[in-house]
Amino acid sequence: MTFTIDTVMVDAKEEFLFLNGNLSSAKICPENRYLYNYNWRDAKIEKVNLDELVFEKSIALAKEGPNGVGDYLSGFYVLENGKLLLQGRNSFFGVDEEGNLLDKVDFMKMEDSGLENSDFIGPQKIFNSSELVLYGYLMNWEEDLYQITKVDLDKKTVEKTDHESLLKLKDYKINMMMDGRSAGGSGPQVIVSGSPEKVILSTNVANEALTMQGLDGVPVYHSFQSQLFPDVLKKPGKTQVESWEEMREVVKEMRSEVNQGKFFADRNGNFYRFSHKLNFSEDTEDSEPKAEVFLTIFDQDLNQLAESSVKELDFQPDFYFYKEGKIWIFKNIDDEMAFIRLSISKN
Image (cartoon, rainbow, N blue to C red; front, side):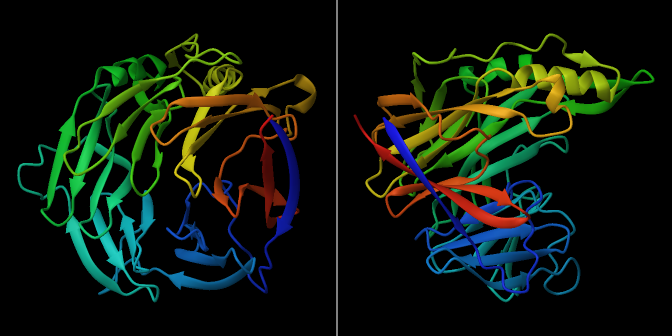
């Protein structure tokens, strides 16, 4: 493959768009027309028109009161009818684009959910927005447990499923111990992505994926082989550290190997995925390390079609999507929202 790039800037008008975290809490609407960016600092969601490349409005979120959604959101989802589904600590909240609370589901109180207090329901993906069924991951840090989840907000049920491909994730968990006590840590990245027809569950540590289609929730396993990079991330040299300096060194070691990114679809239903490794050096200790970036293309059934290094990109792609025949990749340029647009020519 060969690539060409161009850059477009978003007109923020008088707004200071929230770019901390490189849009890690942003979502694209199903039609790829609008970007919704969660600003956790000011408790609002910024709506950007991608067709016009201009900031359009802010949706203020109330923490308390009749429209209250709490003080913490782990994620949110844009439904086809313009409604937003917010995921809090233990609940899902439906709000409109004025921030009005429409409904709330406490998934810790769902019947027969089997959820423990230490269970954390991570990122999910809407499979069927009319029936509000979500697939994703559950993590229990204390028990070194990762499971597939199916959340049905209409039936108010949560199903948990084990899969052998998730067993390896505990080997990439780094515990922080301070004064003989657990003080958190760092774990593997679990990724929920896909298309409206297919939910894809993957991680940053292995060149593989689980796909979910339909409402039966049966996972299908896919394994891939690359000619450009190792298919499994090296296990960390330490799984227990006693200082933040140690933690940073172990995490840096893992980020120096190739990490897998999310899957995303084009208008024909084919899938793409970026992978990358970071090159750290003592000279760039206080600046962003340069990245080696790879792109893999799959068909609708996740059969691998092609892969290539992408020399035109030297930074880690964090937030990206397919629109108008190009891959749009977020880039912070002088504290302004910009997108590097990657065009592909297949040799």
